[in-house]
Structure formats: structure tokens, C-alpha cells
Image (cartoon, rainbow, N blue to C red; front, side, top):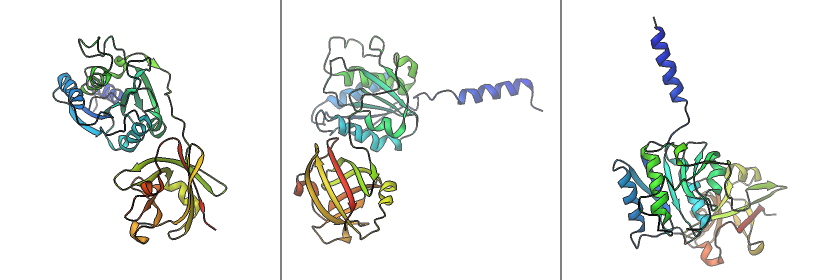
Length: 302
């Protein structure tokens, strides 16, 4: 027979399991536009290790093009969902360092935490996972000791320090700082849509090693176009609304389905519509880049 005391303990444990998730899995994942030619990344990891040597420190990338908040936003959306709930991400692409842009921690509805300036970096992960809460970092508490006179390396002095404290359980999410409205600065871009047989989207990123173009058009939307493998597509690319490419290409399952040097449309590893040349660089040949001001229209070719 379950005693009253046993039942009470069980209910308390159950209630505890339903409390809002705290970031205490001791994992911190970094990304930046710092590169690896100097000691900036090492300094951030040193600060994190100083908070707790038991933290597990990983990287997304440190090769974001300088000041490119869109690519920082994309890399978060590309990778964050594959990490365990409770993981803390420290993203430092911060062209406005030292200005009045807010330093925040976003908690997603999936239970991830992103420590970053609120400068557009959160655009895509906020859409992908939803916003559970946003808090502004209180630098009176969550700032590396003796760093008050440093104005240009918040990645080390504020973000790495705060992220490490959160991941280690030295602070709770509520102790990051005051709550903000559940919204973030968003970079405008063309969302994936299908209307009257025309797919529209953004050239999110380049598969930089090969020059392929990756869009934000998911397979679920592309399949509504009813274009089976082998069918021809009419693809038009725009930069800031100006047409820069127009051509036909087949939808194919893999690169080898078309002759060497020929274009194709395919679904990439994220199951998004993409464009490539078989054993060539589509981006280089047609002078195409990526970002929020690069868009695409796709329709079945007649």
C-alpha cells in the first residue's frame, strides 16, 4: 500500500519534472565570425572553462563571413535542432559591439538556449523552434570580472561567460536578467510559398565547397508542385528584386542523373530544394550569392 508520505514525495518529484527546463546539461556550442587565425575563440573557451572545467565545449563554425548576421542565423537554424534540449549556444556575430543593441538569451520552445546580440541572428531559429522566453543579459551580474573597461569583445566578456554560467547551473535562466517581450529583431526575407503554381523562396546559403544553391523551400512544399523526377523546372533568381538568372533544369534525385557540367534541381540533406551543376559550381558560373536579399521563383516548365 502506498503511504501518504510516499504519495506526497511522488507528486513533488512529478511537479519538479514539469518545471520549465533549465540549461544544465553542461554543453556549450560556439559560433562566430572570428576565424581561427588568432586567439579569440580560444579566449572564449578559456572563460567558459574558468566557469566550470566540467563543461563540454563544441563549435558550429567560426568561419561566418565578417558581420554576416544572416549566415549566423542560418547556421543556428541548420544545427540547433540536432542538439539535446538544454544545450546553450553562444553566437557572436556582432557588428554593433559596444552599441546599444541588446544582449539576450533566447529560450526556444524546444528547450535550447541561444546567447547572442539581438541583431537578426535569431531570425530563423525563432521561426523554426518558436520563442518560449527572452531575457536581456544583466551585465551588472553576468559579466566577466574586471572587464568593465573592455568595449569590443563581448563574446568573451559577456556571452561566453553568461552562456557557461547558464550551462553549468551557476545561474538559472531567470537569473540571466530581466524578461523581455517574446520577440526578436528579424531580418526580412522571402518565406517559402506556393501560389498558382509558382514556388517562391530565399537562397538561404551556398554549399560553399561545391557552389550549390540551397533554398528555404522544403520538400513538403516542393512536392505540391507535382514535379516528378525528370520533369523540367523553370528557375528564376533575383538579387534585391532584379533578375540575375533564368533557366531550365530537370528535377533529379542525384547529381549523376544529368551529364557533367549540366544544371539540376534536387533536395539537399536538409530536404530543401537546391540547385547545382554536376561537378561544377553553379554559384561561380552564374555569379550567384546567398542571403536575405537573394530570392528564387520555380515553376513547372511548359
